[in-house]
Length: 281
Ligand code: AMP
Ligand code: MN
Ligand code: MN
Ligand code: MN
Image (spheres, rainbow, N blue to C red):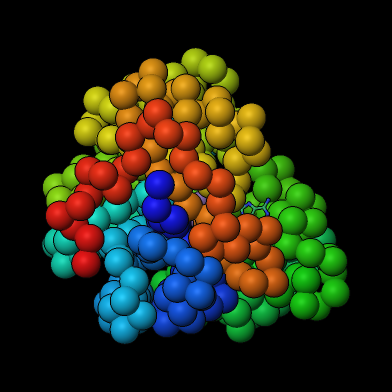
């Protein structure tokens, strides 16, 4: 089993490292196949590919698309697609649109509980003006001493029902899967244990995802405990999906799991990269 890490973020979305620094770190940590999967964005992939090639590190294109399904946000990772595909690039651009307005509203909500100018504060951490996210607000609130770490910020301010939370409509599941597949890639359900769906909702997610042409699910991820990995290994078999593995690394200071430091995929599953051999660069 090779050390594949097919999920991480750079400064082009809400990570703190450049694509070049990630490639170097992946190589140093023994990663043998790497994908950069910035949220709703592919603009870091050119730099990531060049850096991966300079390191002699096999590379797959990637992205992590924000989707609204059953009134919740679900993340769909795309792997091995053509990053110049017009429908994909356009779809991602539309998905990013509205982030700035949402961030202004988040800032208004925070102002009501006495946290002023959070938009301007968050902007100081943003590497890509089209990609202001909750993570940037979290970093700002930690740096200004309001919370001691980012998970406290999410718990107190940025999740449903909290002052800085603003509901948002992301892409449709069907569209996200289609953009990825039509661009020659494979769509993967990211970190399924994170969603808190009822069994019925989860069944609907997996069956609709399959029906739209989705082919993979993350089994080993920085977001799963080992019982969760066992559980989603079974789900992969039940829905005949390939299995993916990725740290979801964002930052040396914040991420619990470093690039390339995950358990192996269970041996009885089909690794998603075995379906992508002709897409590795
Ligand atoms: P957004 O796309 O703006 O809604 O931001 C989502 C990002 O926030 C995710 O990709 C994670 O990086 C981060 N995030 C979500 N929930 C948490 C949490 N509880 N603790 C830390 N980071 C989180
Ligand atoms: Mn993120
Ligand atoms: Mn995610
Ligand atoms: Mn992610």
